[in-house]
Length: 210
Image (cartoon, rainbow, N blue to C red):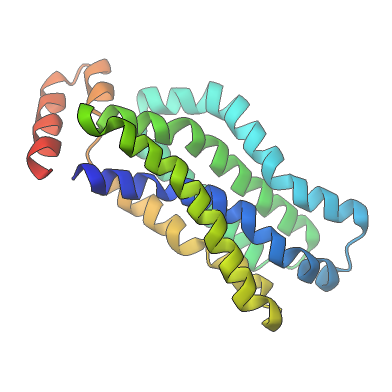
């Protein structure tokens, strides 16, 4: 169970890297499709990192921290998965440059929220002896996401399938959004909100499930 938590939780890291890397292959295709100016190309390219900055600094520090407190780590990560899904589909089916830029910004927000919550969830859920490894998997997943994005770019760039490039991240986004809800909640969060018995049950469940 501990490793399942690490794998599904780290899908957020994979999406981080994937959404960062996929723009490398799709940028010229999108530029030609929408006849973007250099200014619009710059705005579209910076929409995701700016969204991530906004998400981590403002939503992550102010809003997501409240989500984490009142809704739990799992629910907050599920919300980030929903943002990943919305951003991926929005970019894939964009009919205007504004929709595309907005979708990339939403993906950035998802990254910002997940970057705050995922390491917290993994660290609090992991058994002590596996804690470092489970958090490290999240960091590794970011790199794997970038590599996979470049591979997808290589396979699809000749077909000019930039919409498929963007849409492909919807699959891991759906896995994160739904899969995280079937995992145990953070025992520490349960204790903080006064659910001590539930905390004990979750700890035993994680331990017995391996």
